[in-house]
Image (cartoon, helix red, strand yellow):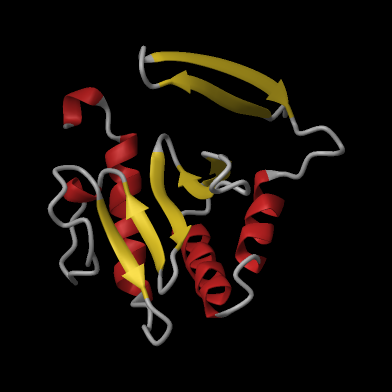
Length: 159
């Protein structure tokens, strides 16, 4: 099976988007999973451990999830961990006092346990800030992830 790495090069002003594909990263490049390993190690404190825990839960909830690293820029040279399944499920960010999981379609995701605690005013996005002492409700987070996957995998007529 041939695996391709896809890169998008966009220009916000014009709305242009150019896509390039290349086979697996060359021997000098790290895989997305290895890059996420490095991102987890970066903080060197509880945030790395929390991000690692969340990553494990995401992968356990959806074994078909694809790990990616996107949006590398000077202010964030290592990029941002992204988990996808027919579209982005969630994005992780390490903040000063929290680890944030952002769900781009979060406003459409069922959240009966009220895990979403930030970005609540957005019409599309919802996020969860996890702090050092927070325990993670694994079952509720798994349900959110699976609902987000369901939104991505729905056919047009089913929406």
